[in-house]
Length: 320
Length: 274
Image 1: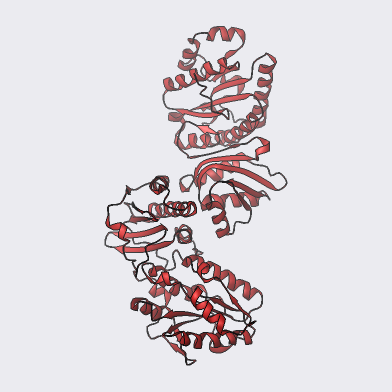
Image 2: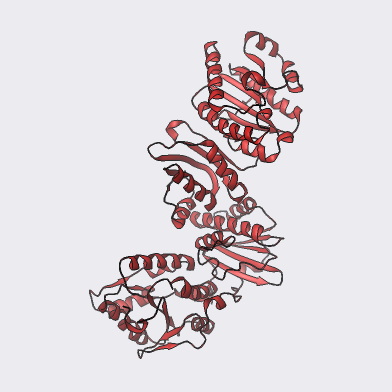
């Protein structure tokens, strides 16, 4: 039997917390966690350093609450989905009737890379619905931009409030609708200059060689190799599943490489493309999922001339 | 003159132009004789233009007289037009190499015009298997070969299938090579790049190589592989499962280990050597 507000709910019970003060945050989180402990439900905290410290101090010593390293869990959306699904599957296999998690996307995600975290917040309504999960995602209204708060309201079916309430979000939008909206990321400032690579209909091998050629020691070797994998997959997808012509452009800054791959098509039809491995065998789905696991930011751009995927290796532009 | 034969002693050489092939054959004959090897030019046309060029090489006639060089009709080493019998053909070259050593030569070097052996799909399927078996034998014996194929007669796909079963070739497609290693180094080596452009050929090449696990392990030296994608890893996983083995992939890249973990490919064990 599930306990608390999610009692009787099948699947994922997804809530956001909007808080103005630390006390408001704790007023929601502490009873949530202790309720889980009391019911014998596996109870997890995946918060950034600041809030984790706050919560740790507020729960009794020895309470069966597991603290996960929040920064690692939330490195990339597709990776977060994969590791949470693994965690949830393990808990259910271990007999859990409900799992409680409080988790927040890192502050760095609230800027120019928010687009893929907005997609994450929407997609998990589906991706975690296989599990009896009750989770809360806290957002600090003192630092979160209004546009992000609007997405939070649209991607969470309900809010948990400091007075113990669980209220529906009036602007809640199911993921199949939200994820079909176009959600371009702001341009990276380095894209204002002419690209250092501009290839038309490159082979995957040409594309890989161009990335290696442009690196010149910029990226850590793992980031470079991951970006090469991603570019190879995306150029392959564009050539195979997109519409000609395919154009690959590359910009380089001291700490990052930005690659765009465009074709004249309409992009992937699967709303969850990139965030979930394409179990339904949709064309190019596995390559796109690997790309989302390999880059530090991926954004999708739809325009009158077609579809563009933008990949960032190294440290993405994250300004708010 | 530097020896045109690459270190593994097994070169796939495709050509469109007989004269260009004759130039290459000359270089190998001259280098082989200089190295003290017995040298054979195996050809379906012992009176053809390439053979004529070789015959005119200074010293070639003397080398023929002394038993150091020979023009060998294709039908005497292989059965021209037939489907090759890989073990029998390997045994024949092993015996010829022994004979060369017994006659005081340093080994046997062959330039073989093998186009007639791979004209049909059945011939090709057998010959690609043979190429790996002879390649395996070459790692242990003083036998080296240039396998020459007429691209204009065979087409790019057939030539690519043959090229990938050699340690080296004179062409950029199909971008990868799968070849035998010395037994102490594992079962086979991979070089080049594996991506969607050659994923089907890679699966075929693994079948042709017919690698036999040792103690449940198939060790692949892939440090010469510049790139491999998830398709290649999935192909290796399937190969390992069918052969009831674990593929041990030795690579200098960080991505195969990450992709293998990501995709749950438990029959592949990646050893990253930096």
